[in-house]
Image (cartoon, rainbow, N blue to C red):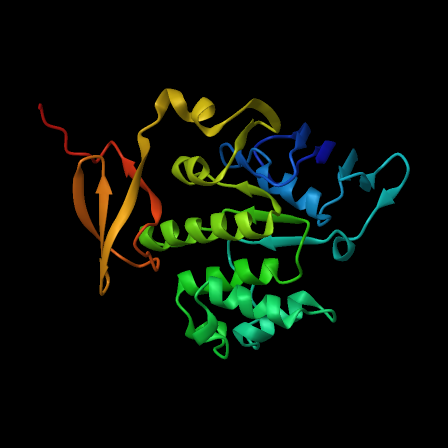
Length: 279
């Protein structure tokens, strides 16, 4: 469990004060949602140890990372976190593989790094430098690098905001796959309701530096929800096309995720763009 109880003034946000008290559950992906300037990124930076609040306590699985009254402030290097930034923050002079090895440190687990490269589809780009990669590939590198050191906590600050729709869906699936495999705890800031609905177990809505609502994505976004998820089964695969069964209908989709016969998949639909006719 990650217990956060912090209070600090905000200098570069619309809110003047950030006051948050919450316990994030271990082994889950939690979301932070709210308007720009509400203090969301500052909260992530405080948890990471990049920003020190004026007053507060942060405890992770029984270990105190921060206690301003007791003058405890474990440095960021010792907090065992991974951080995925909006702008990738990759080292341009290093290859993909070197970026991951550097993040893993001296005790780098090469088999773990190779597995991350494979699961994110980066194995054939491991000797490339970031400037030779697409935006989606750079974001995959940023995600793999954040997990290279086997962190206890993964922090994601608008990680998919710069990617196109199809790449965003693929990366969401990879984040879920990685979380299910490694069971890390993650906290993700996002403005995207669909993204939070697809990835998170619970959402904190922050406004003006304070938590104004807590609940599951459906509880937080249910009133104005325009996004639904359908479950389908893969019944055939040929070249880059997969046949899927939804209810009593069979349709074809472009297979960009390595689907195989028997896979159960989720398909997200925005009902705003849906074609609806009377039956």
